[in-house]
Image 1: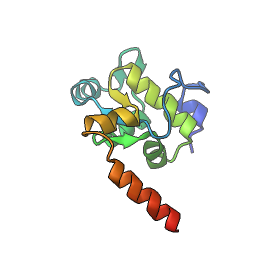
Image 2 (image 1 turned 120 degrees about the horizontal axis):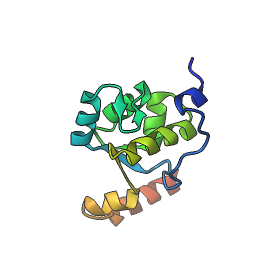
Image 3 (image 1 turned 90 degrees about the vertical axis):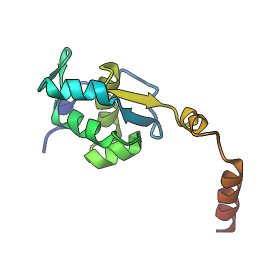
Image 4 (image 1 turned 180 degrees about the horizontal axis):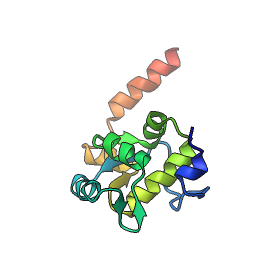
Length: 121
């Protein structure tokens, strides 16, 4: 087992504080392909195996919580790795509300139905 501080190079807090559990992440395909083709180096920081797994997982939009669970790492460690990739331009992070707006808006009928269903439980 690799210690989390080894994966994060000794960092204990993410550089970004805007990554929540439901922030949606998407790989920037063109940039990621170039970085992966370069080998183990991407800018000033190299891509670790966990970075590569994140880029692969985020080819389809995924929430921070999903990525963390898929890596089997603590959320705090995952956020540090995600911050690295966002800073390098290999990953896009979007707040959930902006994703809903881009998809045509929030469906209030669906939200109401879910709320009513939960009340019945």
